[in-house]
Every structure is written in structure tokens, then in C-alpha cells.
Image (tube, rainbow, N blue to C red; front, side, top):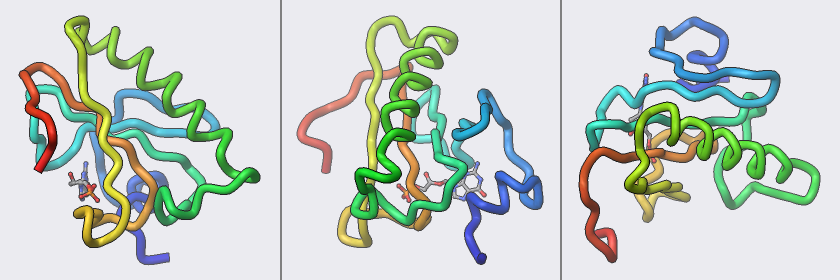
Length: 112
Ligand code: DGP
């Protein structure tokens, strides 16, 4: 499958991993938008948030457990932002479900 994140999971594309277990992986974003910018992805190829179903949604809960753990380990004690872009109109460029964990600066709302 021609998926950048599946290639990161297989090791074909190198990445700076910060967490990995049986079902998820987290690594630094190659184009950081904040002092801390990590991507958390399921190992299963789920194309986007629009493809989450009762059968595959457990990994999303697990991803948020990992986000809470990583936020502490990465020193984001003042807060952080979690972003999921779903679909072209929302700016999703990689069609493998991922959550951006960003912190280390202030964020405005609403996001553009
Ligand atoms: P999105 O626009 O929400 O689909 O975010 C995709 C993110 O993936 C974007 O912030 C840049 C990041 N990215 C793309 N290719 C690579 C890569 O090869 N390695 C890493 N570490 N990040 C990548």
C-alpha cells in the first residue's frame, strides 16, 4: 500500500519515534507547527476519522490514553492541542488516521 505512515511503521521510511506498542505508534512530525509536535497513529490502516466504526474505534480511545501519557512525558503541563484533519477540505494530507499532539506555545481559537 502506498501510504507514508504504513512505510514509517514498517521502517521503510525513518522517523523519530517517541512511543510504540502493539496497536499504536507516535513519532515527531517532520514539519512541526509547535515546539512539540508529535503524531499518534494506529498501526491498522484506517484512512481517516470518517472511517472509524464500532469495530475499530477502541484504538482511538487508546490513542487518547497515549496522548495523556506523552503530554506529561514531553512536559506539556500547561496544556496542549490535539488535532485531527479529516478529508481534503480540512487539510488532511496523509490518508492514514493520525492525531497531532502539539504544545509548547499558545494557540488561538477558532483554528483557521
Ligand atoms: P495532515 O495534514 O493532518 O494529514 O498531517 C500530516 C502530517 O504528516 C503533516 O504535519 C506532516 C507529516 N508528515 C508527512 N510526511 C511525513 C514523514 O515522512 N515523516 C514524518 N515524521 N511526518 C510526516
